[in-house]
Length: 107
Image 1: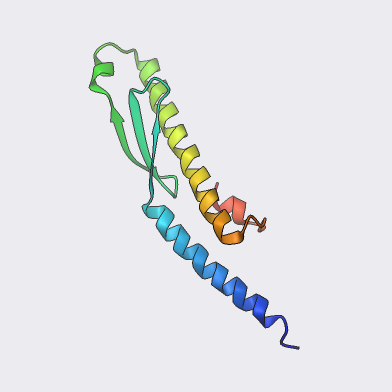
Image 2: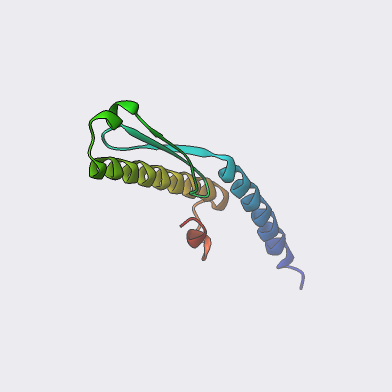
């Protein structure tokens, strides 16, 4: 009758580990660079932009559209890398198991 309690204990342990991993991800800083290398973006594991650096060289002779494209590229690269890192960290906890709803937490 109490056979299923072991599963509940495992789920509670997994939940605690997931919360711990989420805290670590919040502190993790991931860098992304634009394709041309002139812009660098730093995001955390919650996909929040923390920092943006623009090479001063580019500011002298660049048009607005190219700079905007470089910024978008750097931010998107950083976010994509952060998502991949978060998915890898969560996968370590679940052993690659597909847990409903977990994917939406990482998007």
